[in-house]
Image (cartoon, rainbow, N blue to C red; front, side, top):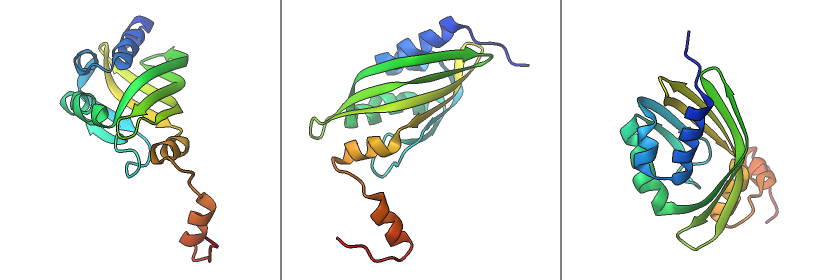
Length: 154
């Protein structure tokens, strides 16, 4: 049976996460952490999968700051149950490339073991985020039609 995580541990993780400081984040990660960020990696390069504390802290030290500056993490709901937590909120960032502000909904599922994060999965409102990162609306009807061999008026 897994050991329940305390709300204090979950809140400590989110203080580190919001800080965006790789050292603070690394201090609360298990050595074998799995870190999943859903979304189209072609449009949003900070989406993907990382395994291990070193890989995740490197993500926060190098990859994320190259692309965006996180301005806010608004936690609307935070639930703690057993060895897991769930968060629903909004993240607001600014693209370094052009200064565009990106703000989209996120949900997290986090599992803990011995007071450390062993599993993190973020579900972005990836369609909204991708449109904002790209700076244009995505026409899914046209994309769907092309995928099915239909003619699309441009």
